[in-house]
Length: 219
Image (cartoon, rainbow, N blue to C red; front, side, top):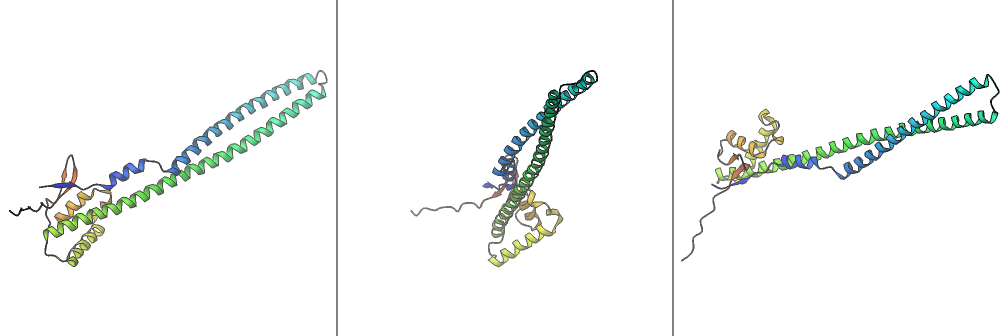
């Protein structure tokens, strides 16, 4: 007997899910760039805080000296001006850091939503192909088992089959299973040829093809 493989769309779905979409690639690039910028801003804050602490030590030492002698007014003005500029730069850096952190958070959430939406699209596409494969295989076996059945009879049997798939808990997750497994279970359930769909350890699920008609030469 000749058999042909009955592919499992879920295997293709699993492979496709691992491949990032263009939106995910762009989001990953922007997230990486944002993380570098965020690290730079934090480093700038560390440097700025170090300068502020140094100015505070200088100011403290200057206060001790001023108790003994009057400090030059220009030196005090320079110190106060430097302190004001650095603290202002620090406030701006902190504001930029907070804004960038929010943008990164939103971008990560957006990337997760995009991946979730892409996964859902692939699941729906795989489910459609699973149904098509099952319907095609079951149509073949019904026509072989009941060659005299008309179109309405075949369609009624297929409708009964899909009602069973939808209502029977045994088939609750059939969209996530190989179509061949479902076809074999349906054949057993409806009393159809059990050898129509079999599982091979190397080839996976396969359906039996109709034997080729003999060709007679006219001599």
